[in-house]
Length: 634
Image 1 (cartoon, rainbow, N blue to C red):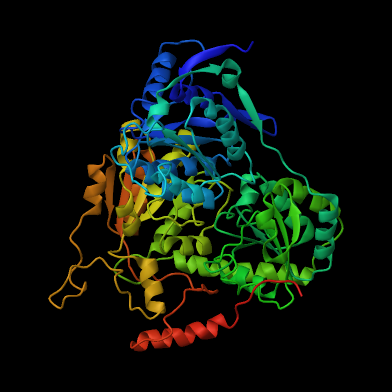
Image 2: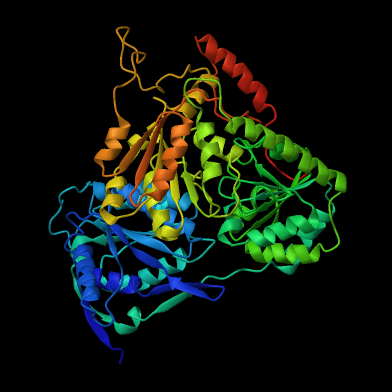
């Protein structure tokens, strides 16, 4: 007869999570580094009690005590961002759980769940829920739905989770936990996993089978290419004259950088990268041509327009990568897609290779032995990249204006940061500048969240990344004033936990990205500057008199104000030497200049308008849209 142990549901969750491991390539590690959370009614006496008991047992040296460290965060959305950033840094082999109270605490996590799932990153969410017994009904903060008493706000997690369940009885926990782990450790199906825990069920005791809490290792496989699919890919490549690789995040998650370099070297196929794939090949490799798409560079986009074959490796082909289906312009262009997820591999009517990126690259390199692109094509790729590198030098150099452009800040950081330090960004105009300009030397150096491009990601992400990389590497989050105001409060968590990161806070009194987009689409930068309301009734008065540097200091960070680039460089050295989170505050020019654009992005313009600026923008939009098409084979 199976031995049992009497635990509450919450205690069982904590004990189970502490004993889950992943293994890939013979390397075994704990799946959960810990649990982020904020306690409120619903989880304080359930998951909160279980985490407290585990902590005390671990400190007392109790044999078999569940090791699941707890970190108190300030915002539930920020906690999920930190967990996702940690998982990204760990190539999806480790993550954090996040617990919240019922109601608003739970729904605060929905945005984070969407980010994790969009980015294909594993995070486990444990929101509290309404009473399963329904004795107290409605409970405090319950959103009642007259259609069914079984609906709560946690149903909002369903479309943004890869797996969702509500544990209404203790025995339901057993199969649900196992299903949750299956999804979290599946490189194709991973994303946010949500287990809703009714507050009365969390505290309910049950005789759980002891084997449930045995150490369990989830083996993360490397699917190899199916031979016929590989042969079709080889045939497509050898028939091409102007092939181009587009390396996405999957190439990094698979640890395929060495194999990508070898493939490019052997075949002479240029390699462009997406936001998630930057660094998969080092920028100075002879076949590297940098970022492709709407925020890409002239070299990669020129080759993309001329390519007769696009080889996507671990990319999901966002509209920025395809420049809203305009950048791959050859009328006969074809696609070969290598991806662990068939959904992504099938995009653009591609020849599909459903496989691990590393294994597929090894197989392709072997199968293509002796074949290479024309020497003139390789030379052209090198010349285009060399021309772009001169543009990068110009963008990074000082500009003749009172305030520095943000590109000057990026240039200084690109020079000062080590190969294995990590730069973090997500939203605003900065991702576009960074994809075009950043010279990534290693796969881990460039951490851009651009699948969801969530304002507020950067600061909590810096905490998650620092927990992943440790003290040997600097973690630098670049934050605009708009993003900073969204989610700064995890600075207090870093101060509380003694986590040291460097935050570069750029102040330009407005939304640079959306302002420029508004202007280009005929909306005259309306509502994109931080200005007081003037006597005219419009938001065109003086700058709003806030002090973001003082605000950052109030959360517990050291703040160094930088008056120009020389002082920024000096203060960066001080921040590196510090043992506390340090904010480098610098004012920059709202209007750039920024790197020259070389591709389009489809943002519709009003078809009718009384504004001359909008009518002019619509005419330009119609002209640009003429090049847009679905990528389908003939």
